[in-house]
Image (cartoon, rainbow, N blue to C red; front, side, top):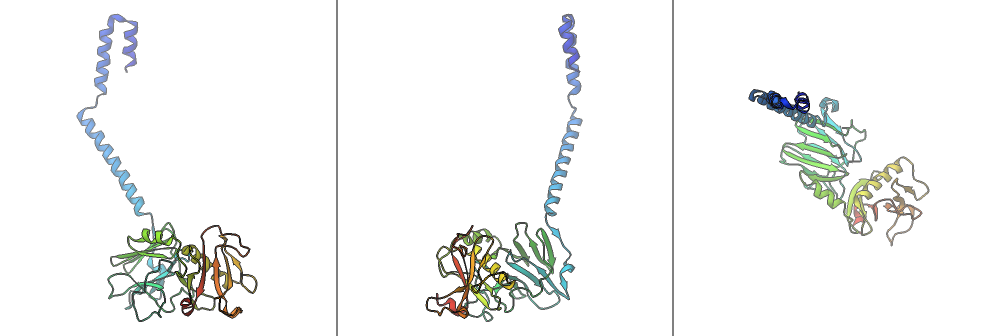
Length: 319
């Protein structure tokens, strides 16, 4: 529209004024009226609102909501977790007077046993629960709550289920978040923390610990509960616990070799079943399970440092 008047001005100087007038008229024709401006603004706002709504919808759909009946086992709803996360599973019994609870393999920093009368002295908690008389989650020791003989249906990463008001979410980073009656906790590789405290707990868990620090608690193939203790300064508890539990699984699968049951983890940590106190007789019956940050030939591991050993409560006091 503007090319023609410009060309006319170049070729026919005599009608320059007419050409300019034409160009001005065309410019005026392209200027939006107040009604058109209002309509354009409204259209942009509608588009922005649609984009915002779409983003909110996407955020709301970040986790797949599952039907709680998928986890119904005769009135008891059992949701499986994962060994890697440290949360083994959660159970709710809406029709019974039974606290909502989650079994957890706690790793350093380990919370205290908050309800006395059940745990043997020196025992770590293995459950986070909330009963009718609780106003928040409490950590307790429950005999027999070291996992499930038959693993329940697991809640996969990116999935969520709500059972009797308890919301269990398998986070995209592999951890778990559990909310119930206004309280919440998270578990990441066995590190447990109340709502809003997980970053501080993970930061503490990443720090090397001193000799004698309790890194966690688990069981050995015989079924005995053992406390996994750092026996070297500078031990990285989180990595050590992951390796130690892997060693127990390997023992149960018959993977280790030799009378000392040597085994090398994928990250290069070495484990064996012949750790002794200095004053103990060097016989197999006295041997304890141990894992250190080097393989049996002495090659350093790819990550972590230190050494841990699985001790009974009585032996733990000997360190």
